[in-house]
Image (cartoon, rainbow, N blue to C red; front, side, top):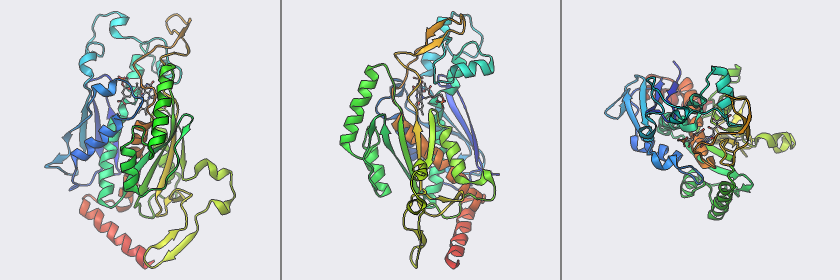
Length: 389
Ligand SMILES: Cc1cc2nc3c(=O)[nH]c(=O)nc-3n(C[C@H](O)[C@H](O)[C@H](O)COP(=O)(O)O)c2cc1C
Ligand SMILES: C=C(O[C@@H]1CC(C(=O)O)=C[C@@H](OP(=O)(O)O)[C@H]1O)C(=O)O
């Protein structure tokens, strides 16, 4: 059975829940590291007040004993501390109350799922759409991805991410060893590598906020140590670059994805795009460059996997756009809910984790076994085969 997961829970409900199936047994789970990843997702300049209320931590309720996976489905929950303020509004039992008491939403926000969701599920209170379409759900996607990340780390696969652009401010691109990239972006409120850009981005976000507006950006994720041969060209749904693209596009507000130089590949000749093949005793086959971001034929080529994603501006605007009241069909400005002005740094953390998940899934498809020991033996065997090739 391949690795899979489902999530449940509303942004203002009691908790978010995830069930992960297909993890091998005997994998050590570092809870502190996992909660650190949840903490990283909460940070970033431009976020709303909700992030001050929450202190996201995962509680494991199945599949782990004494810190190790048993091979059983892993179940985890993350408590919404804000629930105490929303208990009545979110009540499961039918209760009497006015629209105001229920915080009913009836003036859909352009750019959010409100209107589409209301029409599709025949819901007259668009809060029922908002509650589940909210990016609060990315909390448990990060928790699940953090387990995948730990699995990959067992086999020397490392991940880092950064913000490349917020609105009109672009960060200078520095090629850095993965550890340095991690520590430099970790020290930054907007996950860039240089303090000057950080200051510019903060001032820019401040202005956007003051204008009652919102802003998006571009983020990048790099995965090093990925073995050659994950994914396959033999069937469309086994192409790992395609699966990563789907995962990135599924992050709330993401509107595009690139692997390697991505869209630039359509603007320059092949001689400047394709990565020349080299061979040496110590490195085996490798490439002179990595413009294609670690993929050919939907298969990893042993070079770092490089993925970029673009996030649109946050849909909820404090100076709202034109909308229509679904009760009266009269023109009205969209409803305003508490909101982030910019969540690009947080989104870059989410992207690291959805990419980690897809790579871990492909890794287990190739080296699959029911225990960590079995996977290690399969990987060793494959590496020996590569050496003989
Ligand atoms: C980390 C993160 C935080 C977000 N915060 C907000 C927010 O506070 N307010 C909002 O309207 N949208 C926010 N969004 C974006 C919406 O969730 C998203 O636009 C919405 O679900 C509609 O989906 P779509 O943009 O993918 O079409 C956030 C997205 C991410 C990734
Ligand atoms: C509103 C959205 O999600 C955001 C993401 C989020 C989080 O934990 O990331 C928590 C939410 O909190 P609240 O709505 O209570 O302020 C929003 O900040 C959205 O995506 O539409």
